Image 1 (cartoon, helix red, strand yellow):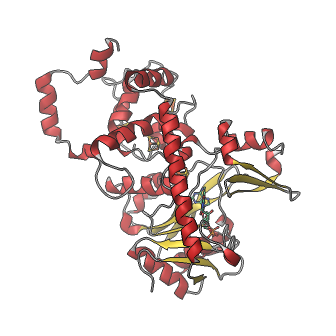
Image 2: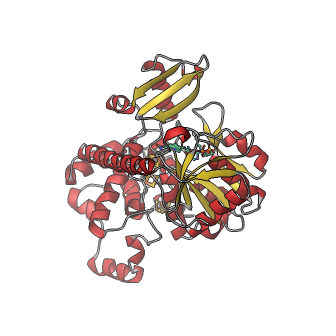
Image 3: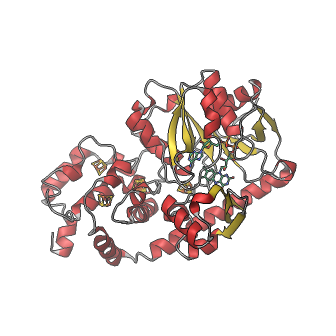
Length: 413
Ligand code: FAD
Ligand code: SF4
Ligand code: SF4
Ligand code: SF4
Ligand code: SF4
């Protein structure tokens, strides 16, 4: 019997499952479907090509083998799909694979009662980062000198982004080198500190798998009682085999996690530093967001934005028919969600005007975290704004006249 905090190496015992690192994750998902622990699995599989990771809902475990393997060239976030298209798992039990940003978005939606966690099994994936499909194609063509359409597999190993072509050619370039040239992982991934998402029920990855199991097994950490039941069930059903991790492997995994977290902190320092501070930062954000065409893409994609009546569509707040929209459009988003931003990068990925919404929001979130000590996506603690007494706040605004701080400071608008 396993318990929260236990760690294992695990690999598949099922014929026909070719996983990224031994196939334990796909096998556990198979167990969950076959034993009817869940009604469906929400995960990711190759679409048109490997630059097109596609979300997929699987209800027949025979279809799972197609979804095995890791796809790094994509920008997906799964929890909002559960909220939008699967009724927030209200009446359906769903197992979902979660990178760190997925796990954090799941918690933020759950604490707002938009996802029913009782019906969710979170299978976590360690995450060193993902690459935008556009950047991936560009860098493979320009830096690797390889036609992106000839690539049959990509992987991230020992700090390198490696591509393998249909002719069997392997080529790897250091991620640091790629990122110095503005290529490599998405910018939000370069700022990310959630490398082993222990918010999940179990969390799986290749860090720490050494010796003869390297590349052939997954390192599993059990993170909840539900996770222990899932893991034990999969072992009992005979879909995975396990052994204790090597002591050196534990050390290596801990060391890599620490290094990656420090890299995330450094990424934040550099990227936030480049925004300037105070008024200078605000002016920079105003200038950048002045390209906005009010397509609402950032709102549609953001896991924290789900309101039926979005304030940005209210004419008394944002005048209709004017482009770019008043800066109030951006201010509304900052005011409503900055304390809960999970740095998933979605609002930057979808922006047709290449506005770095995620960078601006994450920078603001970190400032709010310093002030109020609330870390979004970490646990089920409510965000700071949830504690504002609306009636008191309205009375205060009525008594003091205006809350248009922005208008007062800049004398415009
Ligand atoms: P498999 O049996 O191959 O199953 C993998 C599951 O992950 C499948 O269900 C698949 O659909 C799903 N999946 C694939 N791509 C995505 C995606 N983009 N988002 C959500 N689900 C997805 N491990 C580390 O130790 N260090 C890392 O730096 C690291 N980076 C990763 C980055 C990404 C983007 C991903 C997706 C995974 C990463 N992993 C990392 C985890 C590792 O690659 C393996 O997924 C893990 O070891 C499980 O291997 P497996 O053979 O048991 O999984
Ligand atoms: Fe992975 Fe973090 Fe990037 Fe999400 S934001 S894909 S968890 S590195
Ligand atoms: Fe993700 Fe952007 Fe929303 Fe933050 S503001 S949670 S980065 S979509
Ligand atoms: Fe809701 Fe505000 Fe997001 Fe609009 S911007 S969806 S009102 S949180
Ligand atoms: Fe404006 Fe970009 Fe958001 Fe569209 S996605 S509303 S252009 S900031």
